[in-house]
Image (cartoon, rainbow over all chains, first blue to last red; front, side, top):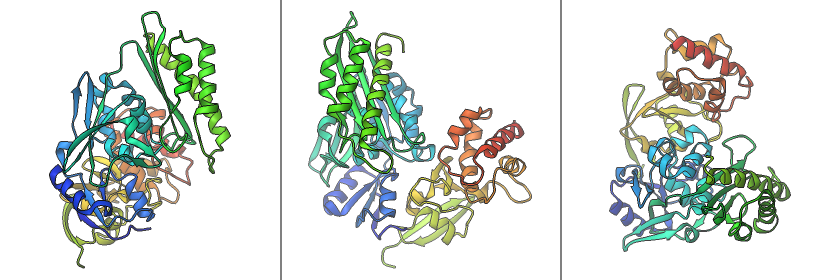
Length: 292
Length: 157
């Protein structure tokens, strides 16, 4: 099992990367952490003629405060984000997500930008950044643009980026006041690809009435799957156990679209979604009320 | 070869210069070009952990890196942990606690655990289980590996 031949470039600046991507277009692939791309190349599922290694560009590895939230350079490695105090303070959902992603060897190498650009619908960061309304800074030779998560992930392993585009930064907005969050997932073994998972964010007003709610599912369709109808049941109401049950059932039955494979049937995944949503909403509610 | 890469890398304290095909996986480079066959190749897609090496201090999968990516960097393989006459305390503990049978997975466990024990000198059983969750062993059922890590922690303290 060996990758097909390719031409290797290791540019040392972003303009050099953009020039290479512009020149080679669909023939080129960006190599970030390589923890998804290299297995795919080993299996020859992808055979890029040109590989543009962006590991030699130090200015893509920053974690900085931004607009009361944080911004992360695309080459921040999972293990770096996992231990970062700024992320712990300003992006608690990201902090809590990191140790659940893959294994320590993978997290030492894998990058935030790489995971997001790969857009695997079973990737935790894909659903978490969608739930958080993160923004993605994309550059090409013509300039740069900021794309919200909802318009970044467009389908199965697909983003709205063009071949000449490079993801350079992810911006995580602050968690609103009186908000709670949770990420729950089930995998056959911890750190495996999850069979089902959900990221939840709840925001309450001073009377504990829900003003904003997010529920986003992984392994539930071609991309991150939101459940707007289920969240409508929550918004404007005080969240009771009955309401949690109703929202979980609504999302699991009507809003997700999980597939069947050798690991789990679609029916079992819907069952998992129902149970996990209840647990996630309960935890998020407790945190929003200040329980943490 | 028209498409080549001139690689220089430090492995177990020795610098090497080799001309390679850029698509060479680091695991194959270590085994075939440097003849350091202690690094084992299992699944070649990042699942089994047998090919784990220490890159600039951190355990990583050598089957998920192309050799040119480690140009100018420092690697430690299982050969760099100890010798037959002067084993690393973790290697001694593996022998004493029967933490291996066929031994295929062992280099990956050792290279994962040596940096980890330095950061976690007094681990609990649960922490050890989490630390080895990226390495597969089909012989031991893991229990003796956990015993060995506890023993190594005692030896190293």
